[in-house]
Length: 274
Image (cartoon, rainbow, N blue to C red; front, side):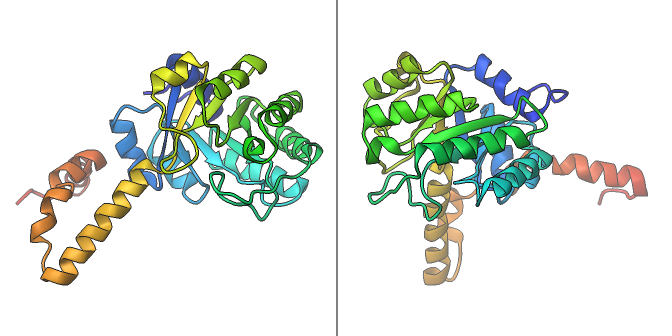
């Protein structure tokens, strides 16, 4: 359990020192955050929609995908301030054009390095907590090659980026080149069905990687299970055949602390349990 007297950004930086590399798992809502916390993860990941709900539910530091910053320098500054107010530990900005594509798909286009530098500077200038993490993601490896990606990353660090998100690398040696060249933590995005092999934590640690991101693993599994359940109910008129796929009511209540909630209600309102 992280020290909650620290700011969220400081908790993320502390987790980074405790676990090497730090495994960061995607959580699509507050309940997923509670499940990840119970599973032993020290840091979470989201894409902005549920930041306040997640940070209210779990003390684990939350890294947020801020895309390209959602506009000009003023928009980036506002996004930074809003994420701080919502309790996020950090954000990452990327160097794609505003009409961006998935980082593991072809056809990506980048802004000039100078424009990305301005994005980073706007975010750094807007943060009120110096521990709040500004991470720079570069998609240059797939577009301009490894040398250009390394050059961009170095420029982003010089502009104030605390960490680097090296997207869509294909080998451990490429990660090693990033970690050797930069004086800040480097994140590896180990997402399924993409350009990057599903490297093990130990392999990435040996390459000097400090954070390992699994943004959609639990979501993909949940989506497949949902389709199975929906199909069974529709075809069979009952969910009986898919009960084994489900979390039980008792397990749900345990995660939520529901019995403690009922106990408090009884204390407050003097109701006797049936």
